[in-house]
Image 1 (cartoon, helix red, strand yellow):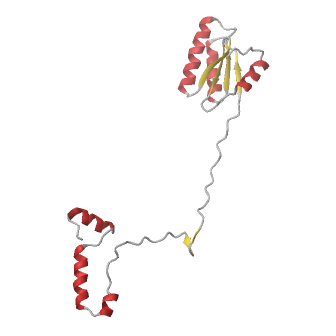
Image 2: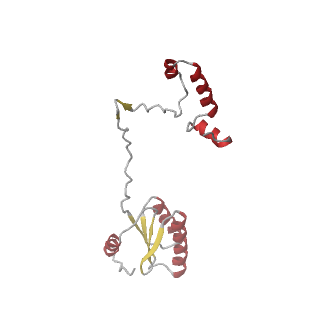
Image 3: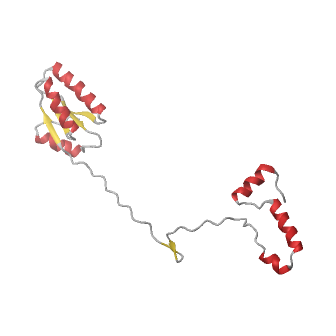
Length: 168
């Protein structure tokens, strides 16, 4: 049954149907040829064959080569304690944080204005470098870099070693 227009041409192009003109042409040739020649007449295949990949040998597909990928390393918890006495100590906080350390910033001995400025600096630092900042005791803050999570148990152990009472 012939298909009209664009749809038929698309199917023929994709190899999903035979061109009606080719079928009629071969039918006319078949009438003129003897029976033996009709069987050997070459007709375009209705289905295109895709060559098999080079990895297939003897009916068995050889395994794909192994891909070796390095396992992501879990960063070890490295802590650095800072007891700032002046705003210039903010550089120590920033340097250690950039080096991948979790920084404990103890502001218990700092005056109120200095503590406020250092908290503002540390929160901006943590935000800018995709880290986090959280209070762990009265006027004591934990600043952790991106991708580092400090478990509650490790945080508690570290604070107890340093003589801080965990209020978080």
